[in-house]
Image (cartoon, rainbow, N blue to C red):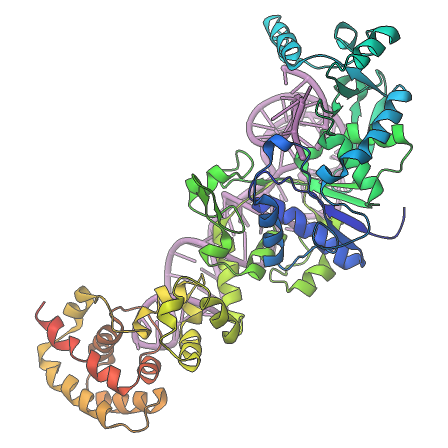
Length: 506
RNA sequence: GCUCCGUUCGUAUAAUGGUAGUACGCCUGAUUUUCUCUCAGGAAACAAGAGUUCGAUUCUCUUACGGAGUACCA
């Protein structure tokens, strides 16, 4: 095998890129980076009836969000193009015809109606699995069952046809999958797959092997749903006399219940995104990790561990660490369930460590941007430091810290009632005066002053602090009391102090 | 139905021919004025059976269960 590592991510632009697809792309990217190879994006758009506008752009935007931008691909350059299969249409004919000439493929003139009928007949006879294969080949209308003369006439009359692979009757087809070891299929179990459609476009199977060969792909890393058809692909490599790439079939990402592939349906059902970016069409909108407030690096780290492990106890990986640690050998065989709790935890961890300036920049591009624009960067950076250990998602900075961007909208009246004692009214007035006198308005000084007051008046912290917290933030959750005071400033503290009077009367 | 693949705490996973670690989640405690974060501790798993072996979670087989594929879709 060539030691020039070239891998490809080959999605079909039929809709938004699924998070499982992102993981496939990620593993391809990681192997390429680790081995000093090339990461290629190829758009598999041979089915023109399933083309969805915007899907290709979505795919690229998603990869770029994760910063796993392809080295080659449509719009990315590279000298193995074009990288859209629809633009390679003419390339495939040569190879199909070679297979036909060699007797490894044949013309099939069956109409879709003929096939439907054949399937129904088989079903009526109790045969659940109609297969267009060696058993039935002779009974259908194709260049195997028909004479050369008949075939020629049909072709000359422009009769619509497909080209099917002629699977040998008795041959064991086996290949070595990096993840699963040796996998083998008996050829008589395989069907004569269509490799060239009636519209002259190749099917996935043909386009896939031709392009992988022409693009000099060394490793095919794809989802397990392709394992079954790999035998067909291996056979085609044999027919063409080409060396097959190394295969690695990734375990599927399962829904949280574990009974099936994760799908867009599950996102709605379990209440989390299954797509990297939001996808909006006329009638459907799907949530995205980005819009939900996830950090791209956190999601990437989370995804990397869904079906792969470094073999060590390490969980948090920087991109560089991931590249260094990654190996096809450590890919897990069994399907992995999607666990949003773990994703949340990763995000929380990443947000705690992310530079404040980076967070601020992202926040300025999100839903609360306008509210933030009323404050200085200096102020917002301090707010971020106060909130960062208390958030999971980006928007939590503002959603959970709104009291740092204006007076509380509502108050925890229940706790106020429980903690407020009339006999302490005099002390709250005194503490207010004390605070208003301070010129050194730092958390440290304010804390010292108030604590000294409480001690010298033999009061409990529990009688005072909860009340101050509620009038300042409205809630019992939040950052250090005096750090909050320092941030919002003396004037604002004194304004909010008024709540102490209104809350008493609720 | 048929073919292929899989099966370690609830979840993600590690290791090992001599009974199992880590992380998330959960519970308890410490810290904190509170919520977090952090720290300490705890409960929790080798699908079942047979075989090989002194001994199997680890190797083999069978069963069960789960998943994928089974289109002129990818």
